[in-house]
Image (cartoon, rainbow, N blue to C red):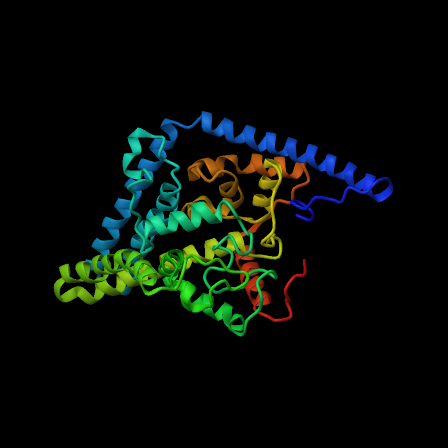
Length: 386
């Protein structure tokens, strides 16, 4: 981003005049950039309608079919192959519900469609152990408003990670790559407890580089955060890991292990997709004092705070279209099918205006994300100055 949000000095003549001229050029460029991005958004929004309703309903239909198939095969399976096919079908159901439906429903992407009332954000409950209202506050209210601004965006560090030079290094950061692999099977549980503020308790209040969700550490405040977390986690666990195994009678162990594996697969694939879209040497992180002065600068900051990855359509859907993370940051209220549709146009606009558009293959992007976490876990990746 360079000097975006930082006003050049107004000296007279020489370098000062050049600085003012450069600022005017930047303002004009960003104005045109914003106009083109806004034009794309309006074009897509004006075409929203039956196509999007059909897409959402088809998603739910396929999801339910996969759930029925998965539960049936897990129960009747007499061999490991059939059992695992059932687990895979159940994972597809979970993946669609969590990422391609749930994520966008909680963003309000389908609120405008009367025929999709079951997906409206005010009452939608997703197939996830993360409590909805806390997630909407942390993700919609903070992450999308202050994307990658250290100390304001709680998704920068995901609890205790260090992803930016603006976050001071601590000894525990040395094992953050190990932490990722250990916590990935429980990714949505971790997301849930850090959005309610429980992970604040793992560090001191107002630790530089982190966002405090809890307003204070009083017992009552912590108790309310714990209640918000566990009022979703406990029923979720009871439904998937007690009720369904109990219904299977003596075959409870097949159902329990199948449900648990599908849950782990859902969390791991979602975690990998999220990390791939947010972390890497080609993404920008901004200091706490960072401000944007125009829509164009804000759009550029959003583009540079994420990167995309390429993948077959099936894997795009199973990742919740997080392969179009840039477009999602620019248009957080567009449904996923439209993000895929507008992606090439956004890339064209960015390249035409000289805004770097991060994109790579799925495997390469994920490896770079893990490599970046490893790098930031080292004290040699010191705190940025200024």
